[in-house]
Structures are given as structure tokens and as C-alpha cells.
Amino acid sequence: MLGQIIEIVGEGRRLSLSRGFLEVSCATGLLGQAPLDAIEAVIFSNPAASLTTQAIAALAARGAPLVICGPDFRPVGYLLPVDGHHAQGDRVEAQARASLPMRKRLWAELVRAKILAQAAALERCCREAQGLRDLARRVRSGDPENFEAQAAQRYFPALFGKNFRRTRDAEGGNALLNYGYTILRAATARAIVGAGLHPSFSLHHRSRGDALRLVDDVMEPFRPTIDIAVRVLLAEGLDSLEPVVKRRLALTLHADFRTEEGVTPLSTVLSRVATSLAQIFLGERKTLALPLTPIPLELADASAFEENL
Image (cartoon, rainbow, N blue to C red; front, top):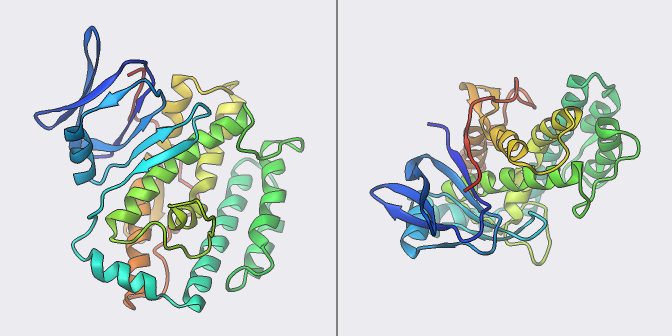
């Protein structure tokens, strides 16, 4: 079963556990419920909401992250399980011992995949992308020339218009990107912890206050999936975070990629990439299990988002 994203947006909402279901209620009674095993993540967008410790423990036991957002819908906190995999101790130890050359090689693999995904996103939108493909071919271990940033400078104006500037604080398309990246980050965090890795031991990201640095590394090749969804929404005149927009962005986790194991939804792709990273740290394989197609075959259209709770 593909997981659901549960967002709590209403004031006075309360989350509790009841017979294997997560229930959302308010002063007037029950608003809705979802099976615990079907939940991908829970996002709190309203500060005037509460949940029981029993519900927190049940979500953690199933690896579902709890995301607390600020007024701008950017995450200000994550709750992740401590015990994510039966071999977690060995995997974290191997992760901590990973050599700098290995980390630089893996970062180059992720950067190359990200730039190729950006090129594919532009081509899907009938934009020229050969320049990005040329940059991807030039990425070396550790990306010392910072081709990732050079690609972004070309990519965003080409995808969203020459006057577009990527910023975390703006409204419109930037707000949609922020929300979409929050969903992607939560799903990636779940995959990282589920693979028995520590989310703070990064390959490249070094922000001192970022506890999810490895998550930010691994999610990079999949950002263009969010970008495509946002561009489609903007083309339809949807430029604010109304419920239908949030639902469409959450559905990106169900978008299918072509992989060596067949057609696979993004949430599962993330788990396989994280598992392959753990195997690399253990010396069991050499490269990441990235999908064969850098962007989805098409965006999902099935409901997987509980709104207005």
C-alpha cells in the first residue's frame, strides 16, 4: 500500500491512537482516521494542535516522521525513530568510518544524477537542456567546480521563467517548492532511518544547525520531480498553498520511476537508494541504486493526502 501524508491544518485538532488507527478529532468530535501502517508522514502546519504520546510512539515504531512546520510551511522540527533497522549499529559504524574519497565519489554521483534529472525536466517541458547534460558529464569527485550551483543558475530560469529567483522566503512558486521539498525531505528521512543510517552523517552538506544533512544529500536527484509538479500547478493558475495544491504535491511520492526492479513509486525508490548507500558503506556494492529514468514516467493521480484535518 502506498503511504498517506496526513497534514494537520485546523486549530484545536488532536491526534490520538485507537485500535491501529490514527484519529484526528476536534471539540465537536471525530474528523477522520487513517490506518497507522498506511501513513507515510504526519505534517503539523498549525501550532494549536496536539497529539498523545501513544500516537507519537506508534508513528515512530512504524518509521513515519512527524514534521512540525513554522508559519511559512518550512519545517522547524522532525521526530524520527531511534531504532530504524535490525543492523543499525553496524551500519552507522560503517557510515561513520566512510573515507573522504568515498564520500566525495558518492556526492559526485548524486550531483550528476540531479543535473541529469534537471535536464530531463526541461526537456519534458520542451526546453533545451544540452548545456546541463554537458555539465553533468564534467562532474568530478566531490564536485570541486560546483557544477551543481552552475546548473541551478541555468535550470530555474529556464523552467520557471527568466525573472524567477529561487528563495526560501518568497510566495507563489517558491512557496510551492518549499512545501513540496518538505514532503520529499520527510520521505527521504524515513528512508534513511529505515536503512539503518544516521541522518546527520553527511556526504557533502555541512550546515552546522542541520540535523538531517545526509537526508539533504540523498534527496537532491529527486528535487526535479517536485519542480515539474510545481510548474504544472503554476501553468494551471494554482500559485498558493490551497488544499488541492498540497494534495498534488504530496502525490509526487507516488510518481513511478523505471528501475532495475521494474516500475517503482518514488517513496520506494528513496528506500532503495538509502539501502544501497548503507551497502556501499559496508563494502557490499559500489554504486547507488538510482532509478533508470531520472524523472517520473508521469505524475501520480491517485488520492494519498488527507486534507482539512
